[in-house]
Image (cartoon, rainbow, N blue to C red; front, side, top):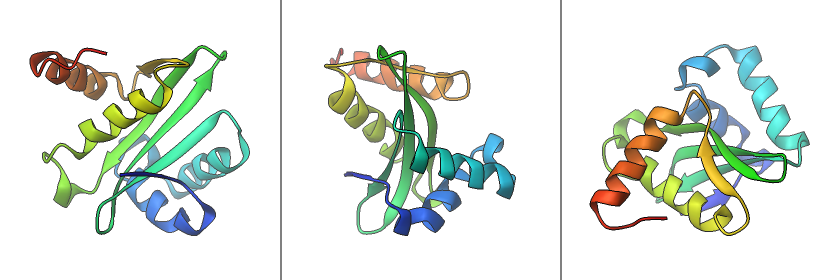
Length: 124
């Protein structure tokens, strides 16, 4: 289930975001987390089962698009559908108000999720 990021989740969120190649640098990670905390158009969520095992971040662009800009799953939980579930929940949460899309970094994974949804009969 997706839960909204809070300051007390900072270390786990930074750890998960650090799996993204663009977020390896500690200073870059700190800037990213600060942006999620300060910018009302940036929203970070954590995927929690028994433990927090994934994160997904979006930014609202021009009041029109909800752009998925970060998505990361703990390596020991990859290939189990967690990333796809996070994308699906974001679509459910934001899809009525915004066009849910991806940025250049997350586009490939987002497309894979869309292809899988269509194969399973789950069109937006």
